Length: 303
Image (cartoon, rainbow, N blue to C red):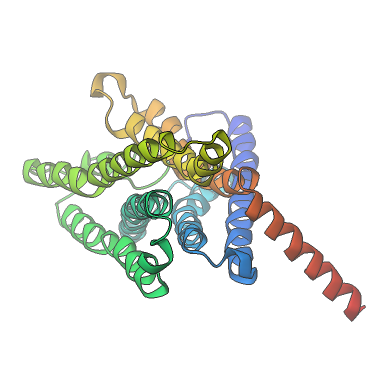
């Protein structure tokens, strides 16, 4: 149903707004990927994981936003049964993988600040590749089991999904069977793959905070904090928006308010992540400048 209850003029305005955000998201995250690959100064583990995060954000956006834009501009609010299942699969896959990757990035910052002398050895190329695979992998079984199980239920009555994408709760409301066991599984899955990474992030940053407080000089403290401030801000945006959608009391969680809050982690946060890492990180800003200068120099040589 997306935002079909709104006037056509408002939907047109939303289309232009979301299209702009979508293009900025694709451009920003693509630039992060290209710059971290092209610039030798950004071949450290932190930027390797940042590149993985940008891949995730692009995939997350591609799974949701194009269909939403289509419903706003073409007024076609239909989606096939298979299309809905596919969208849900990739939503779970990228969402769970992002939780795991954010925890991995927090561990990377923990090692860098708490064990700086051992950091190059611990975070060697083979180790960080393994950590990346471990971060991406949980999304596959979670998405496969949850999507397959949910779409194996019988559906009857209304076929209106009261959301702008095929999320689990609004689709589950269309099921005409006992879903108690599925809901228990969903709660356990949330604890394992969403809350445990969150706890690991909190533990990492507790240790990081203690290590920073023990640094004698103010300059050293600022430098140590600056290396993890961008990641901390990204984590806060992601988990706060996720909590507002899925952990609020049902009495305070109307479908319309859930749609608005869902925009924060499906549309807005993927756009903000590359902006945060670019504006708050001098290495990324300098690398972007060097890359643009090289590109312009190459273009001038060709001309």
